[in-house]
Image 1 (cartoon, protein in one colour):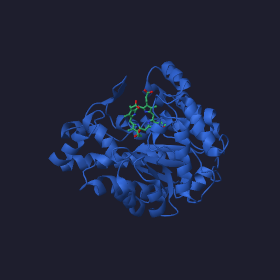
Image 2 (cartoon, rainbow, N blue to C red; image 1 turned 90 degrees about the horizontal axis):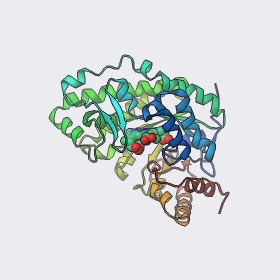
Image 3 (cartoon, protein in one colour; image 1 turned 45 degrees about the vertical axis):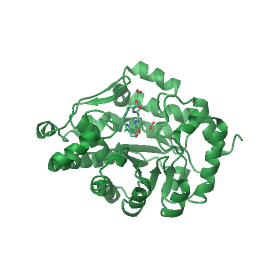
Length: 348
Ligand code: CP3
């Protein structure tokens, strides 16, 4: 086993501050990198990138080679779980993901989790190769979508701005909605466990649409569901830290995750005031993120000011520098280099 427990990133997730704090960024492998665009053209389409281990390995390593981030995140997608359950999935240029929608009992019946790990084996194979390639200095993050976020795509069959189709199914047929959520929860827990078995050092659960959950259902469909997945992983893999990303849930939502989710690290979106978070969330819980991705499209001085403010806000807490959401395709790669260098003190 390749042991990364001494690295600043793993230590931060376990509640120990390192200075400068470790840094990685969401969607660090992606279209803003010319070498990624080349690889994607070679693979032909996005899903071939995800399901061909040598391509997934290469995409994961590209940003590590360029920026020496303190952690690598497996190149994959949250929607591979929907695909493994039997939904058709394709990524149309400029349209985002398109799936066969699960909107009634008949389409729900077609889903089946029996072969989940077999279908996702190329993902686990990529993890095993990556652990060899990355060695002991760069930990590997595995991930999955949270059940609610996966349900929003499963039900609508695509991304929507307000998740109206999922909310309307919850109202119209709560039993069917909860059966789907439960199937997704069990599948996500299995997918994360299989990634841990294959060697990932930490896992992150992306609840990118947590803010769209109806407020009277938020605890049931976001927080409790995450807490059950976390508890199940803790029982089997007590040494693997879990990062929660309940995007857009605001102060009350983050405070509730802090108190009840069991997460080792809370990933904050850019609407969260880091000063508030640092003062109010449990001192040993690592805080990650909150930096506005739009800063990478502005001038270097504004980015530097935001990083100075971050340094001041987090004080001596365990912290991981990251954005509040993914880096966008229009970001100049030099700005990402500047972020890393300035944060580490190499370039003033
Ligand atoms: O570098 C990394 O962060 C690792 C890889 C990763 C991807 N998607 C690659 C990807 C991760 C962790 C994800 C998570 C993901 N996927 C989320 C949660 C995080 C978030 O952004 O809120 C969500 C909601 C998805 C679903 C998804 N995948 C959408 C909505 C889209 C289309 C939008 C877009 O950016 O094009 C994708 C495609 C996708 N996933 C791309 C990448 C690099 C772009 C695909 C391409 O090359 O065209």
